[in-house]
Length: 276
Ligand code: 6AU
Image 1 (tube, rainbow, N blue to C red):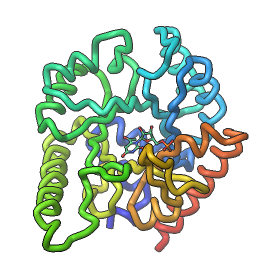
Image 2 (image 1 turned 120 degrees about the vertical axis):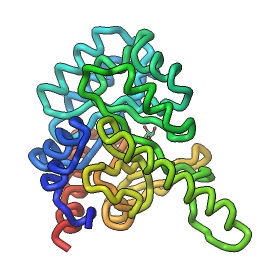
Image 3 (image 1 turned 30 degrees about the vertical axis):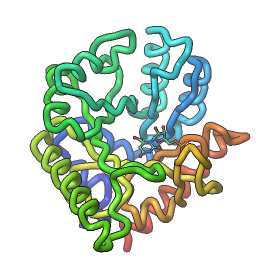
């Protein structure tokens, strides 16, 4: 079963070159922690990458929130990624027609395709969104994560309550998951994994499950809608391979200590899962 297979064995089964690298890196670095660097200045971004870099497998950015963005920031980020051996994911959540996303990916001041190993993408536009992204990087080793389920309260991607009155909602949700997984299977060279909240969506051991909404001490962020779960819940019950932690680290009094603590706890649960 995919959940009990060690990352290193899954690396051999991944078709996307970034997924292979990621699974190998997770095994060698003993980290299934992705930090969500939702910070708004270049200096904060670099200092977070420097301080948490030794403990993470993926450093996830929202580059469009950086107020003093410059191409130099990307050079600095790439240098820190190389120094601490982690991958860069730009959480752009592409969600337009193929032609438009190919431009959003490879043009504009952020020039995402030139530096981000991984990007996130919504499956809502259909297969063309993947074809569009792929067309922008014919000669680069790049990968994407397809967002299938979201962590926010009231999201439209849940099947939690299967009663007669919600049956149609549940059926359409099942269609979204099935269709999204079909897109994954059709583009194994580019899809590295999925972003979701439930186990059993990922059946292919070569795909990586990324799951946000992780905190050691919060349940939610009030009206903003985020919903948090413990490392145990995220890795064991929800099937995450990589857990995304944002404010649990970025807003901690000591982000380095928080990153160490999340890394250790998340890795211990993964070890328990593969030995069960
Ligand atoms: O730990 P937090 O709540 O401070 O940050 C969670 C991070 C944010 C979100 O943009 C992202 O995870 N996220 C995603 C991703 C990774 O695609 C999907 C989702 O369903 N929920 C979510 O919070 O950077």
